[in-house]
Image (cartoon, rainbow, N blue to C red; front, side):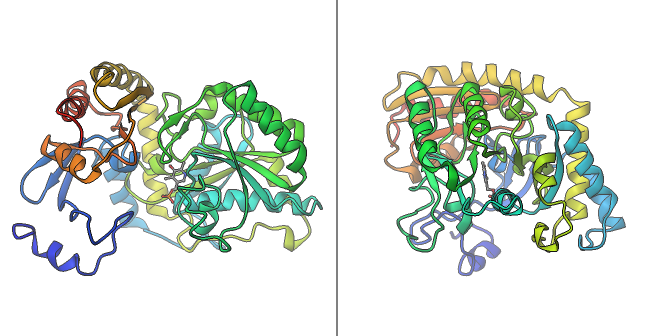
Length: 423
Ligand SMILES: *Cc1c(COP(=O)(O)O)cnc(C)c1O
C-alpha cells in the first residue's frame, strides 16, 4: 500500500469493511471521483462500472439533474424531523410513487435503508392481523435463495445459509423459509405446507422475478401469479421486495407489473434516489392501511426512523423519477439486454461455466464454482472494469445510460478472464 493515499493507509487501521475477512481482504480501491459509468481511482486509473454501485446508480453517476435537485434542496432545507412536520419533497414523492405503482398500492412509509423497509413491511403484516383481532399469525413465509437484508429480523427471512441462521440460533425469530414454487410439484409442496401452517402465517414475502443478492436467480411471472392465488386462497398478505427489481432493472418499471400481480405491500430502495442518498419506502394497499385506521391508539403503526423522509433524499428521488419520465429508460434497458446477451454468449461453453442468463439490464454468468474470488476480482480490475463476482457468479447490472461500447467492454473483460481459465 506504499503508493496509496495517506488517508487510506491511516483509515484502514480504523475502518471495518462490509462482508470482508479483514485479515485477508485486498484493501479497497481508493476512489476520488465518479462520472457517468466511470469510477476514477486515486492513481489515475479509470474503471468502467459494471454494477452501478450495487445497482443503485441507474442514471449513471453525477447526473446533472439529480445534482441540481440536491443542491437546490440543500440550500433550502436538508432535513427536518418527520414527526409532526412535513415537507413538499416527501409528500410529492409519496403521491408520485402511489401513482406509478399498480392497483391501490397508495400508502407510503419512508425509511433510510432497504433492510428497514423490509422490517417495516413485516411489522405491518404482523400487526395487520393483530389489529383485525387475529392472534397467532406472527410468522413470515419466505423462500430459499432469497435475500432481504442484514438486520436481525431480515436475516431471519433470508436463505438460511445467507442469513447464517445456524450461527445465530436462538437470536433470530423463527420464520418459514420454503422452496420457491417453480413447477407443479413445488407448488403442490407449498400448498400442503400452507394447509398445515397458514394459521400461523401473516404474509408471504418474495423478491419478484429475480432473487438478487442471493445469487441472481430468475423465476417466471407465473410463480408470482401462483403466489397471489395462494395468498388469496389462504387469506394471507403478499409482500414483494422490489428493492433490487424496482425502477426498471428487469425491463419493467416494477417487476409486479410484468406479472400483472398487485402485492399487498411492496418495498423499494436501491435505485430510488438514483444512487445518491439512502432512502427506502414501504408501500401498502388500502386494505392494509385500513386495518390501522382506528380509534384505538394501540392500532397505530409504531415506527419512525430519525431520518425518515429526509428532504435531500426525497428531492433527489423526485428528480430521479423526472428522468424516468423524460428519458426512454425502458428502451435503454431493452437495448442493454440485447448487448448483454450478445456479449456474454461467448462465455457459454467456456470451462466452468454452467449457464449464461439475462433479464432486462441484468447479465449473469453462472460458474460451477469460483475457487479464488480474490484473484478473479484482481484480474477484472486489471481489465479496467469494476465487477464484483460473489459466491459462484459473475454478474453485470450497469447503469441504464451505459453505451453499447461500455457493455461490450464489460462483457469482453468477463469473457477474456474466463477464456484464460478462471482461478
Ligand atoms: C439490497 C437489498 C435489501 C437490503 O437493502 P439495504 O439497503 O442494504 O438494507 C433488501 N432486499 C433486497 C431484494 C435487496 O436487494
